[in-house]
Image 1 (cartoon, each protein chain N blue to C red):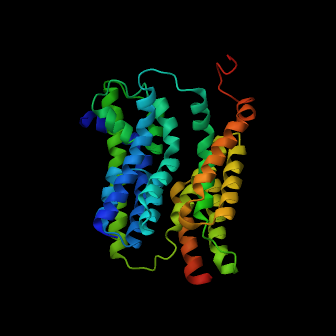
Image 2: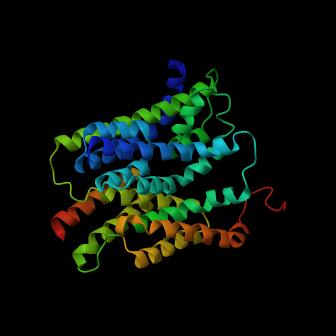
Image 3: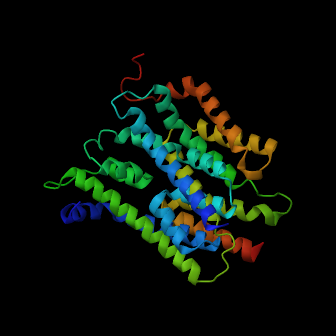
Length: 239
Length: 108
């Protein structure tokens, strides 16, 4: 990474700068409101670096959740990363030690940038990708620390600020709905989870474990119909 | 919570997050083709999981009195409406959260 690649990367990252500062500030503020020291905001953003994961993390910390529950919830929340990695396999090849950081820092927004941009003439494309990843990470850390400090200094009544996690998931759901033409999985997820919640009750979020089993089993059963009409543009009929 | 307990929770969440990002590179980084069922689940499981997590967010809502459920559902509807209208993450999240805070603190 050098000044040239940073300068080339910066303009592409401005939308992420805006987004990460604001979403990060809300995260830091929530964590402060839940009674955790500002330092934890910075540590979480440095080591976890996951928007929805950290919003969920606030709730897990506030409830002093068992480690196994935290691991399970983080795992299912981050399942979508599996798809991101698959499409970045080639892009990250030959990046040496930086590949590890690229994998670590593959958030939704960085993924979207990397999938869409091309290094300008005269800038090494590996340096360019790395610069984008580092800049985005710095924005996120900055936002969450600003939010945590503000939350510690400004003493307004913060009851209800934890709704930001619900709001974030709703936003993700709207975006997924609009980018996908098949909506059956959404209904399966909602109805299957509601059924488990009604049977098992809300305690500790344990109902999510059978719910996840139902979702995966349901999706496997629905595979013939979901894959049929609008599958991959090429090679879909080759079997 | 003690500092050690907080650190342990943060460490677990950080490690699991990294593992989910690293898994495809570990499994398929040597050029193997991912099984079709993995690609299929990778495409359709995320929307189902987000729906599941929204239900999770609403799990403690009680229907005993209007004031118990109305704020969460009004603010939730506002988030969806705002996002359909302006497609601005910050506006939808911050706007919906402030509306929720006003509703639980001052209205209901």
